[in-house]
Length: 237
Image (cartoon, helix red, strand yellow):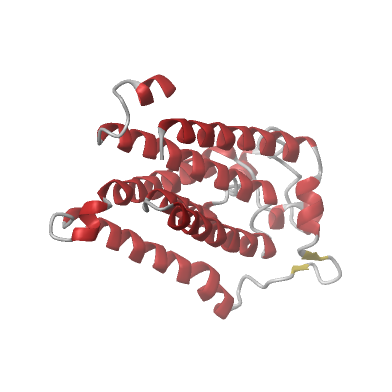
């Protein structure tokens, strides 16, 4: 994977992020999609967030799996000299570790600063808050203090595993790694949409941020490991 391909991926990620913000903020696509998950007759969502089995499958379970993956990656990084596979994939392991931590931290930081409510909090879905978005703020200070739903935090752990695309050498394995991150991220994201916690744009933005972070981390790691010529990544950033 060369510098040019990473640069193209970075440009695509940033462009998609911009398009998502523009499209979802300037149209009612978020509301249209979210309405498909809402049962107005019973003022409920198609999935009950208190269903314990689904919560284990799509909330607590994936969190535990992510912790295990990070633990294994950290162990592989620490003992890479004693593990042949880890030694030959040390750059990819480092990218997965850094990307996951940075993605989850970045999304968590943004959630606390954007003051965007969840769909279930809105009067449109029998809540008590007015419709408010990233660019259109309509909440009172008291409401804003309790609005922590943008971007999608839960899905960030899944999308962070898009960085698995940088763990492997063959194109097929890189594609599989990318598909795992994309599949897990959207599985978690759709679950949270179905219980009224997030809009489509929240999940899309998290996906874009995760990929941008992964590409930037990959560029930095490859540069530090001597994969790219001196100054290449620095000039890009």
